Length: 283
Image 1 (cartoon, one colour):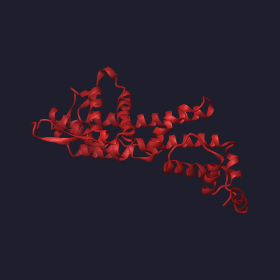
Image 2 (tube, one colour):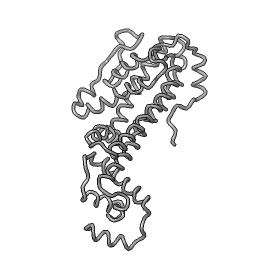
Image 3 (cartoon, one colour):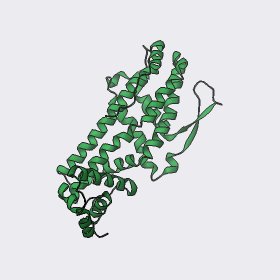
Image 4 (tube, one colour):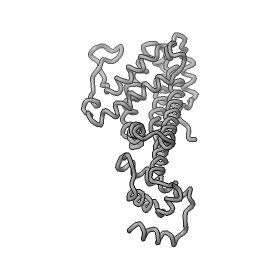
């Protein structure tokens, strides 16, 4: 249906409020980006298509956004806001905490605690890598983080950067809370040189996972390689499979954390039995 005919027919029906128009078109725009990917710009034809599919007229669109570029800035902000949900994969966090409850006996020896830590990293890092980097929202976030830097300086660019910063801060705070709960429970702590600031560790760990996600798009065979490594304290004959993501994540962990000399196993067990919730909460 041509745009002018659509406008005439729609004009005979009830008119949505501007807030509803904005919500409808942004939702349709988000769905469009998730389906076809992120583009650098937007034209009149695409505006008409998205408006039509959202059930609004181009006139109603113009009452909310004075230009396609203004809409694109709002859409990019919406995409940045949504990405934080996918980056802090709730299922990985919850599963890790539940897994610890099954390994309480191993927390009573240094060797057992190291084994628990390795098992968590080996499995959770790979699972998180697969889940997060396969997400359309994460792929959009990664593309947006690069795309926005090509925009000319101005109010629209700064708004999108602010949304990206807010998303990043939210993610870092969620993961910082998670690590502050989990690491002491398995007998580890942040190395003193980092002055109890977990955020550099969070950023480094996330960069490994997300960087490999970007590289996988071009050289999947390298990123998806597997290696059989000896199992701790089980002899050279006993091996287990490690992914590149897990090995890389473990390298970051060992760079930032160390065994806690003041660890008390009974206190850790009480924490696990108490079921402390370290998963992100819906706002």
